Length: 236
Image (cartoon, rainbow, N blue to C red; front, side, top):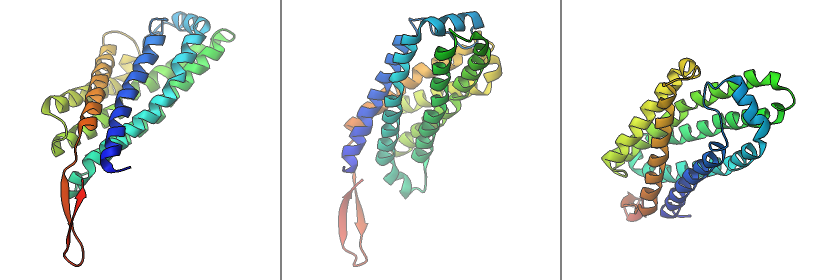
């Protein structure tokens, strides 16, 4: 694919990713997915009785990871040429954050599947598994913050995204990082859990807006010289 083609693929992937993670939550939250810090009895009841909802929600996530990676690569292609000229690598930082959050969230989904498999037969494992789930889920905000920071600063520095969009991404990054930093207290339940929730909602809006930007993106043309001093226009 050409650069412009893959950037648009990345934009469509961003919107697809947002749709997948939203749909997963639409399936699991109304079914009663416990919040971070929930009581063991609530967790056991949900995973013992709502295995179908857990299965459907989990089935959507692998596609979301692929779409997130495509988005990251598409954004990198749109930003990288301009960044190289300034010797910067914000887009690489953002792509690294997306890759790390994919790996970390795999731990969250794996723990949910383990709970769905054991809660009805061996509830004694529930407290440890749920504590692990909450810890990994909350700490994942670190990598979401990294993705938001890298692609927001990179987008602002290259002029790809507008100031309000960059500010939205940086605010979401601050909330996600704050939630991860305060993980010990967030896991205890209470109002601190709103940090991650609000940051997640802003992250979804941010990635949809980024996807639309990439779909509309038209790269500029730069000039490259050969050893014979001939000029050739190449797409950015």
